[in-house]
Image 1 (cartoon, rainbow, N blue to C red):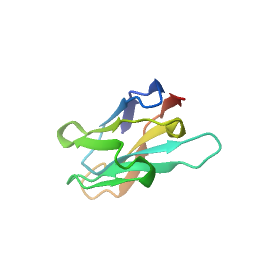
Image 2 (cartoon, helix red, strand yellow; image 1 turned 135 degrees about the vertical axis):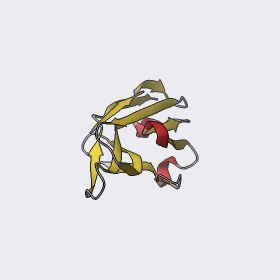
Image 3 (cartoon, one colour; image 1 turned 120 degrees about the horizontal axis):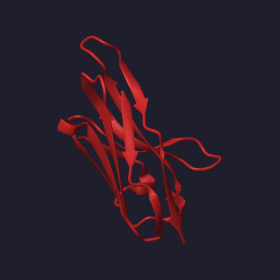
Image 4 (cartoon, one colour; image 1 turned 45 degrees about the vertical axis):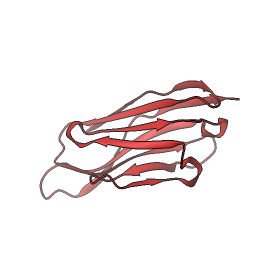
Length: 120
């Protein structure tokens, strides 16, 4: 299983970026997909997640600014980030909680990370 993320970059404060991540390989079913971020010297924290049924969860710091969406047919999760702030600067990682085959245990898989830098 591979998670390929794209869409990071450098943007000025107040700007927007869109991250996308596609899961591929031997996948039977995907439960939740999400985005985490890790700033230098800090722990990796949840930004937003979405279940297969479309229920979403956001960190308080991004509510009203970020929107997570998902295409179950394409095993893709996206994160639309608006009104970006310098404190949003971090490496963003996509995550998928999935089952590789019928009866297999559920496991977490991670993308390679994509840098988001917001300048003031």
